[in-house]
Image (cartoon, rainbow, N blue to C red):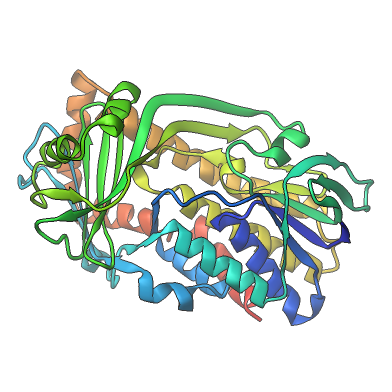
Length: 408
């Protein structure tokens, strides 16, 4: 196979599919971009879910995927966050409610596989081309020439290469971009459980000893758990019988939903932090986990990646509409400046929460726990945090001011 494209996205996860769908839909408006997406052989889904922010909802709508997703997305209106040193029903539990921010909900919980499928369908419907294969090498372009990508299925040339191929990004490696990585020495366990008491529209998160435990309601009345624990404990939980696992889960949730019965297989993945030194190179850009990975305790990984996708698409459309060449360095540098600072700020905040509330001990940890209670008493602070969780900070949603350029 030998193909000539305008844009080649490497990586078939939700972020890569979002970039592809946004650019393919923009191309339908008259720019006639040929957009391809290179995806490796698919692995079995691991049961992960996404807590979609309001910004992500709007991005998925702009990409043409939201109508297919909405029937399967469960809106949650309340969130309860507490430390294991206090009771789940005490006044020290941090409570967020959508009504406090004048919002109908705080976001949606949905399976990752559904998001990926809907985005891929939207990509193909917009004229995108799916290529099966793996990236083997990249040959950099001349100043205005295309990049040549050697894949397991043949050579592909493109004016813009987008690396959306995860934390072990082949694109990042091929470009020689270094990344700072660090292990949290934790495993994140995911599973679906059926509770005695339905959480209805409430999501729960507890800072347990050595980690965090999230209880996320799903549309069918079951609950997805994301349980980050020390590696040795995680391996033991994976090996435990269903009865033992359920008993430990009941204890660590403080019985807020009653007994929790496993409704599927358990899976686990290592928890790490990653930050690429650069997001761009000549005619190439990194998005999502290829550029940054954060701790899952705040559920922001995919949301940050979707914001990368929307920002890159918006700036590309705007630049080309103004006469810039596709993949111009000026456009890519603007994308890097916009997203890198936002992502690093979120990485720092999430890392601090994990170190102080999940891993911390001593006076600093006590002060942080008291801060949760103080935040709970401040309507102003709670509205601020709700806005951050919804992705409503101006720097994160400025792309919407020209949203029509992505939805023409």
